Image (cartoon, each protein chain N blue to C red):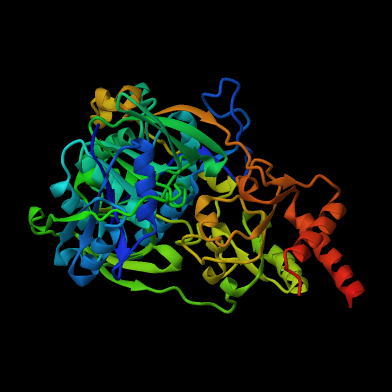
Length: 262
Length: 327
């Protein structure tokens, strides 16, 4: 099975306090710790496990810039067969639909049985996989938390409310968006990354992929971000500023006062 | 102004809570609007759901089809493409169904898609301005979208409060015949209900809930020690389950359990909306997090900016002392 995994490099929200820049038109990106989008990492691991069970290849692709090569390199170190960077000035400011349009053209240039994305990235939109599937006329399932391969099709489980799971059968080729927790992604150390340091990562532009530049980028975006802002803290949240000991004392009092101690 | 539709989920004849929230969102777009509800399904369950949603919506489109007995997004999409007029605005909840359906639907309708809208700001010359959140809720942003050619908008569950409105008695319009035969290359097989687990976190009045800030499996004991002296249970957020440090049955959130404690100690939990969706009954929330920007501080009653790996043992010690004195 030939599997394509679409990944993205994002600021790691568990490692960073996200602040606005002085102009308020972007977040302050200096000194941010970036990493591969967490659900995407699970998607790569799932692709590698499927390949190791049934054979085939795993290709990792991202739409971005030179700086995004580091996440592709990381996924190569995990065991992906090849990585491709799709990059062009014409792609700047693309919305989710623009990204899906670029990926669609790339998919049509290859032969993939299965396309995986993470369920969502740092913008919390959860949109590119579903759009890509619709553009390709492939079936789609989101929030996938298990995959088993049966001849010519997959049985997938979707995460629905209350921890329940919805079981579906889906034909290939298809697009799936992968939820975190589906597997345990393997560890990648500096050594592993050094071992793939010389593996070439081809960069494809709009012309190579066959994207009409007027269908993507800032001008074609139907949903445009105006600005970022920090929501005002609600009235209720009182921050305790005492010593650790004083704060612990206060929490004990509060738990008792709210009927929490028996 | 484009006409506004709301896709209404229902199960066993009972309409989803999102029905009233989508109506509230529609009124934010246009205060004078009378949006149309669309329900798909089959048989008596669909009839019952359509009948009950008439108290909210003045017009209800009923799409009955045996293939739609279970809401398979691939089939619902085909039905909606068949019946929606051009340039419609369609509202859905941003839940496991809306995430499954809406992005692809917007492609098939060739219209804009706004995911996970938390507020609607303004509309001017058919350009709608909405509020979203990014980076795990740490930062919000305004987005603009021209809706003159229609749009699919996913509304965050719980973000729009259902308004008290005079009950209407809507008309039901049968749109079943506008939908031809439906086939998809994805078939629904069954739903597997979550296992209940060893501890029922839904029954506890105090929860010590841990998130990514617990950092490693061995540290879970810090929360268990505190829970023991408090007489509480340990629950957790998604990353702790993803890392296999706790069972799924301990997870609070839209994809886990819904809890109603009196006191909720959120320890190293960032406060993603999917997690907050699992906390009901307005408990007293005490949040402890190293990151002062964590969204949990926006909903907590009391917050402490501290490392839980240091704070939890301190609190456990303090409660032990108090227990000793009290005893």
